[in-house]
Image (tube, rainbow, N blue to C red; front, side, top):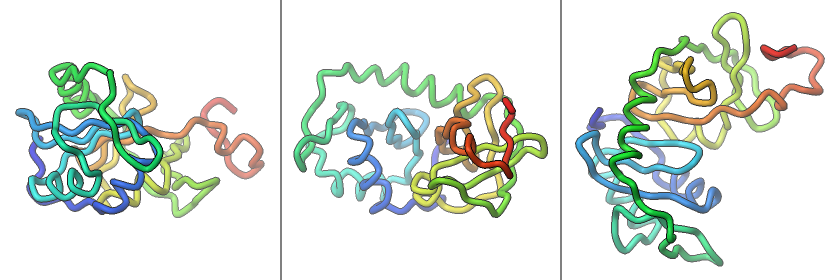
Length: 171
């Protein structure tokens, strides 16, 4: 789905990309995508340009690594068609609606489907515009879709392992 209106925080996105260390940006039929192992963001054309400049990427469609304060091209094959397919599969997956609980725990915001909790990194959630349209994808239990255009990974249940007040699905 093309993003023409949903805001992201360009500075926070660039910071998280550098922290993760490996990322790729490319344009395809699904839009202007920024992909890491932890999130897939659909950017507006303007945001796409700003993030590319902020990360100082010389070209698109190449995996980059953050090394010693600069980005360098990775040897990882781009596989853009496969990445776009994965992005679309996540967006088209059937998911449970999540609601924000108002709770935070160990650097995460806690969401619930009414039965279990889902922990989403504060840093990742703060990169994207607030929404109430958050779904945990059933087939890909480690992914949430954000407003139908972004995907974010969820933290594992160790977030609340030692918390006697919060119980995850496995407890």
